[in-house]
Amino acid sequence: MAGGLAGLLLVAACAHKQPVKPATAALPVVAKPAPAPAPVIAAAPPTGAAVATTPSYVPDYNHAGDPLPDNVLAWDALLKNQDVTNGLDVVKFSFSFTNITTGPVTVISVHPSCGCTTAELPPTPWLLPAGTSGEIKLNVNIQGKIGTLFKYVTVTTDKGTKNLNLRINILPEPVVKMTDPDIENGIAVSKVDRQAVFKGDCASCHNKNLNGKYAQQLFAAACTICHEAERRATMVPDLRHLKVPTNPDFWRVWITSGKPGSLMPAFAKAQGGPLDDIQIASLAQYLNAIYPSTVPLPPAGK
Image 1 (cartoon, rainbow, N blue to C red):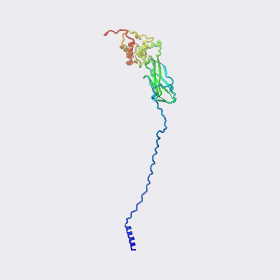
Image 2 (tube, helix red, strand yellow):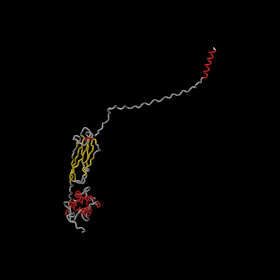
Image 3 (cartoon, helix red, strand yellow):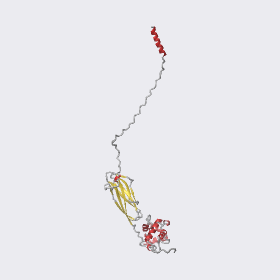
Image 4 (cartoon, rainbow, N blue to C red):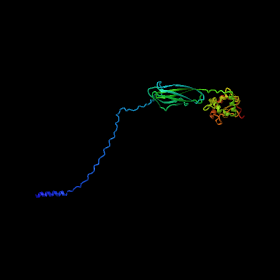
């Protein structure tokens, strides 16, 4: 009995000495955010799989230098002619055509044969779908030219090349018929003002289309109207039978300043005329060549 009691006392003593842990507060539970969904990446098409795209036409330049077959572009003409009057500055042409193939045709370039011809067309390369029509406009500068002119332009496409040909026949200007009263009135006006031939109604004959002309062409346009007229005025000398010695300086002085008190006007621009120095020099050289002096020059010093 004594032994049992002692055991109970020993157990109670040990329980009294064991430290008691303080109670801890419960931590709040924080909810974790849900993970963001992974991005969806479209799978690449397998190698070799066909992808639908809009096809684009790429011209094949390998045939650009070949002759253009007749069954590609239908032209309204390959040669065009015009008769024009001398004095016109520019002659205009127009060529129309249609793509008669079942596919597109590309105009790569249009090259004139010389610098006096220019072409008007859309920017190149110029794509023409099947059945499409087009127009190429050409302008030829004929200022100062005479006779018959032949020109051409080369049209280059991705199917080949084609030449368009031009022929221009420049006709002489119609002769103006003057009545006796007209002639007498013109002489009377020129006696008062010899430069009057370059003004008013007179200018339509004496001061027309002289720009850009030299030598023979200038002589025909500026001199023959008086000096080689069918009814030359008695005051106008015959250049073939002058009674004074001539040389290039003689002709240059007369062309430049004319002769006061006569019908001969001053042709130099500085004196109210229509010609520049280069034109006058070319005309003097030409006159000296076609009308050589028939009167010997006086001895030197006299």
